[in-house]
Image 1 (cartoon, rainbow, N blue to C red):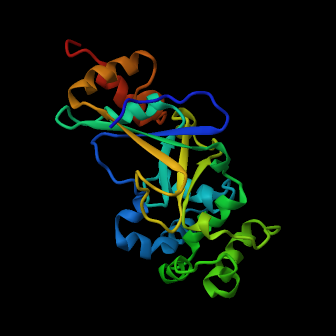
Image 2 (image 1 turned 60 degrees about the vertical axis):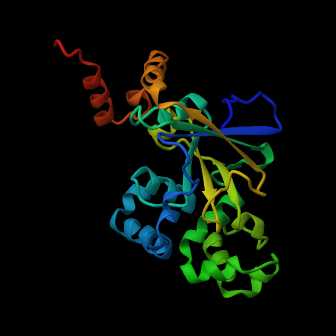
Length: 263
C-alpha cells in the first residue's frame, strides 16, 4: 500500500480512481465474477433490450447499452472508475470501521484513453454479442490476421459494422485481450455527478496489479477507524450520497440521515 497520489497535470499520463469499502479486492467487473454470467452475456443484453427498447433509444452503440445495464446493476464487462480521487475516497469510506477500505489509482499513457464512440471501444464492447465459445476461439488466436479467417472474428466484424458501417477490418487482438479506459458520454446524471469513467474489459477477466497492459495500479489503504471522520470531511466539501447519487430516493435518504435525533 502507498500514499494516495493525486496525479500531476502532465499531458502524457491520465489518472483514474476507484474506491472499495474493504481492501484486497480483485479488479474484476461484475460479468466475470460468475461463470454463468459470462456464458449468457449476449442473452442478458438481448433480453433487456427486447423488454425495454425505449430505455436504449438514445444510446450510441453497444458500449452505451452496457453503460445503461451497469446503471441498473446488471452484470457487464465494465469496471466503474472516476476522474476524481475524492469520489473514490467516498466509496472507500463506506462500510464499517471494522474493515479497512482502499483507494485504487490507475495510471496509464493518455494515448490509451478512448472516447465512447471510438473504433477500439466498439470492437471490444461488441464481444458482448458473441457466444462464450466464440470468444474462446478468439482468445486462442495469436495473430491479428487470423481474425479474418475465423468465423467468430467475422461475426465480431459483422456486429461492429452494424453500428459503424465505415469500419475497416483492422481489429487488434491486443485490444480484444486487454483493458480499455473509456471516457463516456455524460448521458446520465450519475456519471456526471461522479465524474465517472469506465475500464472496458476484453477477453481477460481480471486486471492484476502487476500487468503488461500499460496500466499501473496503486492501492492506498483507508483505515477503518478513519472512515467516519473522512465521511464528515467529504460532506463538508459537497461529496456525499445526495450529490453523487442525484436520484430522489438517494437524496431523501441522505436528508433523513442528517436529521438530528432530537427532532
